[in-house]
Length: 142
Length: 142
DNA sequence: ATAAATTAAATTGTGTACAATTTAATTGTA
DNA sequence: TACAATTAAATTGTACACAATTTAATTTAT
Image (cartoon, rainbow over the protein chains, first blue to last red):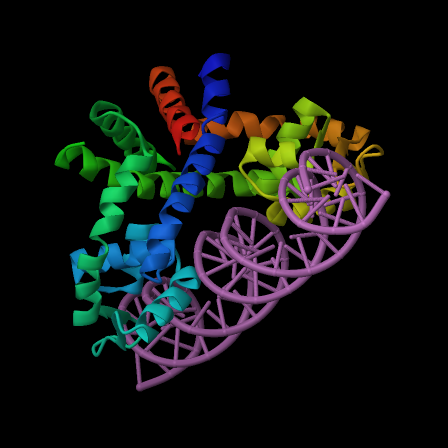
């Protein structure tokens, strides 16, 4: 890897970090309407798709550990969107299951979907390129 | 904006967020050697370049507000890398100035520069493309 | 069979991140 | 020139994010 390449690689972390934060900040007023934080929202996004999952697998999908997920899941359970229960055949494992109220929330989240895209003003081609590059990093990061 | 475009835009936030966190996690052992957190490190990166700056301008560069910066700057002052002092002509403004010890730290940070690039395994072309797309978002986010 | 090793969550402690508010200084305006 | 409005940091409160440790359950290897 030459000097130029080294320089640009080192300059990638900061815009990734800033971009991620700025977009999440844009989500905030929309998520406030649903009384969800961004972390709670991405958990719900997984739950709408998976319906049921354990903490370890949820963490692998979201790149979050139990230290982060445990309090978030407890909060979503308080809001009656999720149910937490120990796996019968292995009590170490905590199963998380979405409730009817949790699935109903998906309809209310449709607005977020519409409004979010308007804040990222990339063409379809650029968006796909960016998406692919990000997953190239995520899949190869050692 | 059509349905496809809308879908991909909405899928960008999560990999940005995950990517940013995973790369920062890679930084950690390297930064631990310098006894710096990632946030302290990016502040020092600006200081190595600017030498002197006030909190508002530092925040604009780093996309961070005083609520985040104040405690970080206090910690860097404790470590003798920075000096904090009120602007004589406008006492509301806090000037931050790098010390000799702070500038000396730059040499010790050279290893980080080398090691970081090896964890992002993108070609030079891909890195530049990603860099440009990220700044396109940062510069146009409403 | 049982002690050691492993695994899964939860807990603890530190450090952001940011909205909202507060404090203090400065500027604009009637 | 007072006094309202604005500005800059700091403070307060909430919510992650994650390393390290703990607790409890399960598996592995004698």
